[in-house]
Every structure is written in C-alpha cells, then in structure tokens.
Amino acid sequence: MTHTGKNATVVIVGGGVAGLALGNFLLRKGISCIVLERHSRDYVEQRQRAGALDAGGVRRLHEWGLAEVVEGHSQGDPDSGMPLLIEGEMRWWKMNDDSEDVDGAFCPQQILVQNLIKVFLRDGGDLRFGAEDVSLHDIDTANPVVRYRDAAGSTKTVSCDFVAGSDGFRGVSRTAIPDDILVCSTHEFGYAWLTVMTEVPADPLAVLAVHSRGFAAQITRGPHASRLYLQCPLTDTIEQWPDDRIWNELEARFGEPVTPKGPITSKQVVPLRGVVFSPMSYGTLYLLGDAAHLISPMSAQGMSLALHDADVFARAVIHQVENHDSGLLDSYSNTCLDHTWRQQASAVWMTEAMHDSGDPSYEGEFRRQIARKNLEGLLAR
Image (cartoon, rainbow, N blue to C red; front, side, top):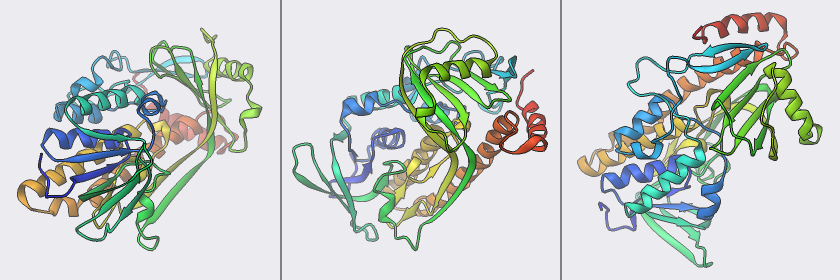
C-alpha cells in the first residue's frame, strides 16, 4: 500500500456510496485509505435509501473492476424502457443513452452499499464503523488530521495527505470549509414528495405516473420492498396521509388497481430541490456526493453523481502519488462542478416535465401544456 509515513494517504469520512466506492477504487491501485463511518455496519447495510445507477455509473464500476457489485441488477429490456402511465394510459419512457456500451441498473442503494462493503473488507480495506464525533483539523496545510471517538469510547487521531468528505448533506466535512469561502446555490421546485416504504415488491421494478392529481411512482427497493412516491404540497404532513389514503391515491394516479398492498413501514414528506456547494475542495479537503450537492430525486442521479466524484478524485490522487503532479487534484472542484451543473440542468428539465405536465394547480395550465410537449420527447412510443 502506498502512503507517505502517515496513517493513510486518504481518510474518507462517510461510508455511503461515494466513500465506499472511493475506498474500493483506491484499494485497487494500492493507495492506503481509511474509511470512517459513524453508524454500525448493521445500520449502514440495512438503511434504505433511494437510487438507481445510470449507464455511466455502471460503466465506472466496470472500469475499476467492480462489476460484481451490480451483477444481477438490470433495467430489463433496454428497448422497451420504463412504464410511464399518463392519465392511466400506458406509455414507455426511454431510459438508455445510445452512446453508452452498458445499460443502467436497478441496483437499490442498500444492495450497492452492502456489496461495496463486502468487497472492500474482503480485499483488506480499513473500514471503521462506530466512528463518532469526527472533526477535521489543519486541512489548510499539507498535514491534515482527523479525530474521532471509536466504538469503545477512545479518542483517535489519524494523519493523512488528503481528506475525502463523503459524509452526506448533514455531515461534518463541509462545515470545515470557512463560510466566506463556501457558496451554496439552491433551487426549490415548490412541491414535495410523500415518500413511503412498503413491505411490497414492485413488479415491474418501476412504474411512474403523470396525472392531473399529481406525479406518482412505485420503485423497487429489493425483492421484498418498494418505495411509493406521491407529489404533494410542501405544507402536507404525514398525519394527513393515513395508509388507506396512500394506497387509494396511488391507484387513482395509476388509473388502475395496485396489487398487492401491504404494510407501510415509514413515511416522510420531502421537498424537491437542487443544491450545489462550491468549491468542492479546500486545502486538502475534497467533498464528494451529497456532501457537495443534492439533485432532484426525479433524476435518479444521486448515486451516479457520487460515483463520478469518487472516480475523479481517485484518479487525481493516483496521479499525484504516481507522478507527483497535483494538476488533477487542483482541477477536481471545477471538473466535478461542471459535471454536476450539467446533471442539475437535466434534472430540472426532467422534474418540471414530469410534474408540471400533471397537476396544474402548481404552475398553471400554460406550463402544463408546455410540459406535456416536453414529456413527449422522453417517450419511446
């Protein structure tokens, strides 16, 4: 393993998709790294999060020799696309980018995380669960350190060359960047999703619906669970959505009976928005994934963005170690922000097309008609 006399070349804060992917990428090139994750392994592996991988995300995993972490997960027939109900009429949403030589994957985030953990530990990776009270120090120097309290309650200090902050939107990494340096850009869409976890499998793996009552969807979260999505006002609360109302509303927006129905295990009202923090690096700290940006869940790009950041940062670190050239690290923020803004632009367009074309009470009839025309461009037939 390559390191510089410190505990590791890279300390990765956060064991989600971005952090675990980065750890695996670095491990494959002999770059020493330590992954610090606040929660227990059981908690992380059982945590249900939304996400699907586009073809670019799958391709990156293949390029790093990690095809096994998404094996057995596919989007079905790429020629048929994804079912899209428009006022109850079955249409098909084009999913694949013809420029990609691999298909995307319906690999739930929970499964991807489990597989990344398994491969990382199998290959000798250093993954420390239960690392609480993480704090970053001296990140504006060449000798950053990360302190944390381990599962036994002891305070530990880890020295490194670089810190990868991949601990999510509410993590501590981003707070280490001075307020007068960090810029936050946000777009609020003006509506929310009621997101509902159910102990009901999804068949097919995903169905989306555009309806005058609002957007709706049912998407797989593994062989025995699915998540339901219902567009709703920002002011709605979960108390306004008892279980029977949820199933009845899903059927109304799908325009057909929904079977089977089953236990609902959680509900949450999530405002739709896009967020980008800039810069994505400061000193020896580099932000990845949700620590740097949130994208509309309608785009299903969150995991793919995380993998893009991990890929760019891993290649930059490897280039630095092998060639003693910081050029790729210096351009990391600009490279990732360029990609992030492109994806945000696509996500805004997609979100507005799918939501404005349904319930006109949010944006009016004029925007509904425009969105319907835009929606036609997404349909395979």
